[in-house]
Amino acid sequence: MNPALAPLFTPLRLNAALTLRNRIALAPCTRNRATEDMSPTPGAATHYASRADAGLLITEGTIVAKQVQGYIETPGIFLDSHVRAWAKVTDTVHQRGGTIFLQLWHTGRMAHSYWNGGTQPLGASAVLDPGPRRQTRGLQLHHEMPRAMTGAEVREAIGHYRAAAARAKDAGFDGIEIHGANGYLPEQFLRLHTNKRTDEWGGSAANRARLGIAVVDACAEGIGAERVGLRLSPAAYFSEMRYTPGDNDALLELLSALRSRPIAYIHTGIVDDLPYDYLDGTSTEYLRRHWNGVLIGNGAYSPKQAAAQIAKGGFDLIAWGRIFLANPDLLTRLRDGTPLADYSRALLDDLT
Image (tube, rainbow, N blue to C red):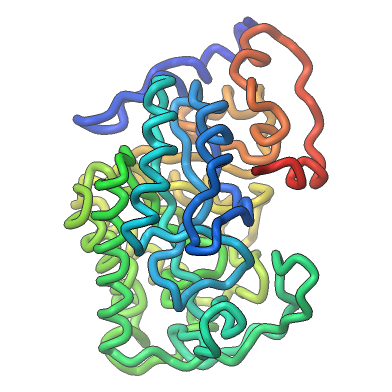
């Protein structure tokens, strides 16, 4: 093995319950593969188990309630049938010695009535995303104007997360990751552009951070705080999300509150970890400055770059999506010095 890559293969004690055998994670990658009742397909077990030599597997986004579906054929974790189907995935991964977290997903204003019986999407506020929709497999759909959630609906959403975390535990997952990045519900509450509320869930930085904190606490009740991860995207780069001065104040309120909670990790949610002026660096660098716990880096790092960052403490694990999709045997290739296969979107057609 190239000595420069050695940091990738050192174990990491994630918490009192879990020690990861290396510093490589499979990033959550939406597969758009689910059965009619929104269970993972039988092929999901093969997909994840084939990559189980990673230190940590993080699944595709998995919705916490039927009415928040925003994309075609995405799985859920709100029915007993979902628990049974996901248990087959976790059993197969565990048979190969793997550790797997389920990513919990509430799309908020990114939901769509097409999949939800005509139900209007709900978000922090009635702010329309005018951009094109993604992952609709040819359907001619546009974003819809969301309705601002009532206080009761905010509390109901928090309850959906709590129930989903408990179901993930029943399905045998080692933990869960809250999808708080990329324009979905927790980020919709954090950012001033999408949160125009004047109640306890909006306005001040502390109020805008309140949902994220409540969701973490709810998931901790469902599966244990040490088994809860959170994905955040300090860079407002995804879809129609935009940076407004003051956004970072709410993010810092959230991170400050989480320091007193023994959660598993924070995970950078971004495609390319590029510098932004309002972050004074990259998203991962921003999170590292404000989070001393376990940090998962992400964003088009090469293996050598990732190993160097781990060695110097820039982050503690590296999550890869595209190169892990193209190379199920990624760890073997890195150990042996075998060239990596190139990623292409055509690979997604082969998923089962």
